[in-house]
Image (cartoon, rainbow, N blue to C red):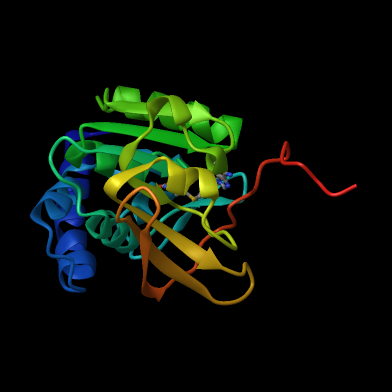
Length: 223
Ligand code: SAH
C-alpha cells in the first residue's frame, strides 16, 4: 500500500468513528480510541478494501461477515471492560473485533469454527502486532475451559439460547453479550451479568441481525 493510501484510510477511519459510532451514542473513550487505531482495511478482503469504512457488515468468505463497526463498538462498550480484563470472543471471523478488544483488554481468547477463517485471522492479528490474542479453531459454544474464568464474553453469532458452558465460564461480576433469537425472525442483543455462583441478571439491549451460531456437531443427538 502506498503512503497516500495509508493516510487516506486513516482519514476515513477518523471520519467513520465520528459519523457512525460517536454520533449514535457510544461514549466509552477506550472503545472510541481502539476503533480509531485498528485498521479495518486489513481485515476485509482485498477487493472490498475501498469499502472498509462504510457503515455496514461486509462479506469475508465462507458465507460469513465482518460486523459493522458501530455494532462492534456497541457490543464492546456493553462489556464495560476494566483494565486487565480477560475476554473470550466466539466467532473470530476476520479478527477485526478481536483486534479492537486487544487494544482494550489484557488477554483475548477467540474461537472460530471455520478453519480457513481462524487461520487467516490468526496470521493477520499476529502481523498487526496483537500478541495478546489467542485464536483457536473449534466450537465456541463449549467455551475455552482451560483459560476460564473470563471477565467478559462476547458472541458474534446468533443462537436460540445462551450456551450453558459460556455462562459457567463467566467470572462473578463478569458480563456476557450475545444476540439471541431465531435466524429468520427477531434477534435481540442480550447482556447477562453474573451476580454470584448461582445468579445471573439478564438485560435486553436492542434488536440486531447476525449470522447463526452453529452448535457442536459432536453434541449428543436423540436417536
Ligand atoms: N467478530 C467477527 C465477526 C464474525 S461473524 C469480525 O469482527 O469479523 C460470526 C462468526 O461466528 C463467523 O465467522 C462464524 O463462522 C462463527 N461461528 C458460528 N458459530 C460458531 C461456533 N459455534 N463456534 C465458533 N465460531 C462460530
